[in-house]
Image (cartoon, rainbow, N blue to C red; front, side, top):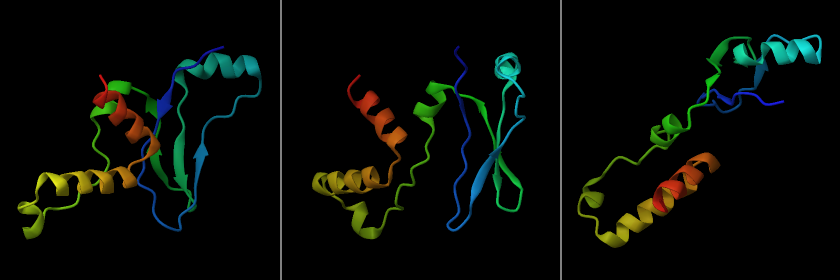
Length: 109
């Protein structure tokens, strides 16, 4: 059995609890029939839908910019190549595992 990968993106809020809601099949056969149209929602603890899954597209994930880049300051405007390396290290520390994998695939193509 195989299924289509899906993703849902939500910037989590500190202290909030999230869960998934989807139509639960009553049997394996029903689950297999529903796979092509499967969709799930991410819901907050208040029951509010905050995101809905979509079919995963790896090319979109490679171009999505989700890692915040610090705003330039007067000091960084005159940054040398050494400071650029330090900035890259800082951004790397805040990147998700998927973002790191995507960067490494790009860097070593």
